[in-house]
Length: 348
Image (tube, rainbow, N blue to C red):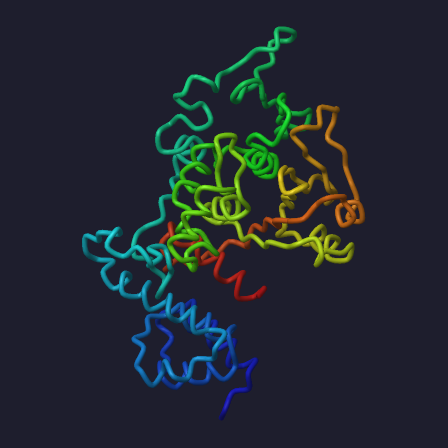
């Protein structure tokens, strides 16, 4: 009996999450092409050797995805060998195929690694600028970041960065840390991504001259003024799903939808193409506006209408924590990426 589209998508979900589920590669892929990108994304979670005949059936909107899959698959096939990742610069070594990636994710159960980074320095870098301070009144400890910026915690234990200098220095980093309330993402994290901008979304497709131009302009400067691609990639790398929106496409109903979505942890906004700040979700699913250049106490709560009508805001980065994937047969290190993929597929 021929399955309808909805039944076939449910079948593909079973195929995607259980590698013991039998499927007819060519026949099922042909049906997936007839349905469209959602079905193709599901079937690309399995190991597939594409034939010329199969390639001819791919709909136009999915051709780039399949071409990328083929590059990733060639690397994935070598997962049981010693892989020189640099020999496959266009392949994603963390792509999940049949429940495995070519290399294990670098997540660690050791809190000191996951928070402070590989070198153990975290936001206390070795440049001598980032130190512990003491306010001299009640002995409360805070962090001085760079030349005068400092971080405290409010009465509820939430991060509160103060940007003592004018301008947008490290505002993107502070916005992320306000949202996550931790230091899994640090200055070193963002600098490393900025120094390798040719691998970021939207840049890989540019020609060499354009890549050099992008790399030397707004993705990173000496003041830590990071581009939305850098912020988004850093969040994706630790398990979050991100959505980039532009103000023309934002309204009160959409922002309210984000507020009530239990998977949304907040929004990072850009004001005047120069300054990043955050709206984080706090108790009772309220928005709290966290702006590192706002020295008033405490950070204010705001409405969805206020966010939708905020002046001079041009870009919004919605940050989503996808539901965990608890599949015993999937290696622990790969479950984060699988959770992201399932969320993306279910919420195109």
